[in-house]
Image 1: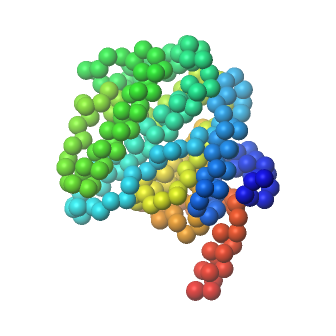
Image 2 (image 1 turned 135 degrees about the vertical axis):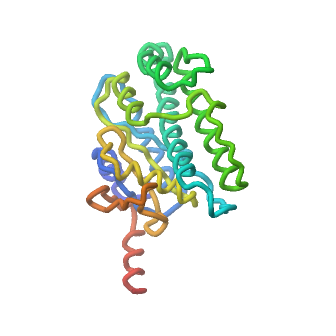
Length: 267
């Protein structure tokens, strides 16, 4: 028996609706297992309109001390958003190759790979030939931006040399749109963010940027967090995301009730 009451209902409440959502529940293994079960139940589906869940293992930078208050905020914003895009893209494709024959997927993904080779790959690099090449390049880019963040924000080293990677930027909307076409699924990807520990403010704001975007027909952000543990509701452009207007909420347990009770008592 699961940790939460009406787990099947909760799964449908989360995945049957394309709205961005904050999912309130206490941190811990129970929440992690429940969300991983959702990702297992909603796999990558070809040739059918069916929502697909991705449990994102890595989505934010570690919270580290900023060594210089004069660091370029635009640069930090770019690093943070690109890291998030590459993290989502690589996890989707890793899940796909775990579910389907690689030869079938290579045939399907040829158009997407050709488009990236033509418009996005650094000219000094060899074109990608198959899905494994694409996944490798996406992960390299993700790791590159994580390294840049740690070195720039932690040590003040300006090491952002985009010629070091084959794919320096990901046109995220275009990528997801092409991805849905090649798998022939008109539904959406539910991207599950399970925030069990602190992440950098810029990563929180990058996630908020997706929540504030009208992309939930393709990407629906599902943010699992304790009610008082999301440290900003502004995006990288300082725009506020708002409940009801930009996202809905789901309650796994009494954490939201207890938080509001304490908040009213302390006011």
